[in-house]
Length: 339
Image (tube, rainbow, N blue to C red):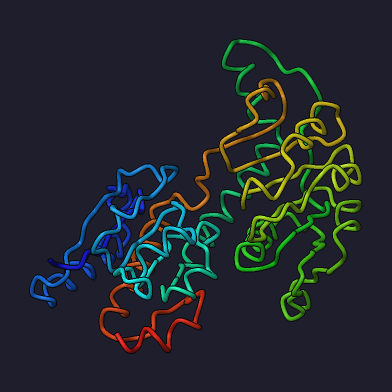
């Protein structure tokens, strides 16, 4: 029975509007594996699968590599499907940056190499961050709804951006690119990161500070950290200015969304932008300056094409006995080279 390369990334086969040069590069790499293996490997596209649905061991039967969306790979699943547990799963190539949905400790234990595509979503996500910030600063949703229904403006004025203070939480690729895109507004930059990038700070004039000071002194705050640990809660929101805008185009659980709702509702802060589906069903955001989107930060043609290419290349390199780029758990490499 042939080994399967299972493609679960929901947008891997999407037709792209602007047709970037590398639109089909990822698919061609997977087709090359099928051709070179003479039937030993086949590519199985299951892009219509809902990532929120629990994966079963049966779905991973004879699966050698997965191009993964946000479905969960926990210790129980890996203990029943992974290479070192008697299964065939050897590689999980994340179609995107985050890998919180994968139990990395279990992946190491059971011999599954994990990769991601950290550079691919950088520009698209930074652009979406700027767009979200502008929407919240301009009360775009409220103005649209009123104008669209034939009503005139009510409520406070829009916020000025030029010569204000931008606070960046997390100065990795996306945080730095966001600062670059906003540079035309001549903003002072405050930054917070557990691992400060002193070279970047020196070149841009950014100033690293602690999180509380950043919350106190910033007019606009944008989050670009990884992980699942909440970084902005009620205490941090209390420190912010009444004209502050908070933007979270990283992960929804990095902010206490209920506390952010209360802060906007009470006028404690001016607005909140979130690139996640609003899950607080009992808190109606209509008529509030809260801007949401269904996690589409990297959902551009170039972003998709780059994630396709990066995730497929990890599979292609691994198939040819090469170490893939952007390995999350390099401890597995020594073992995987023996396969």
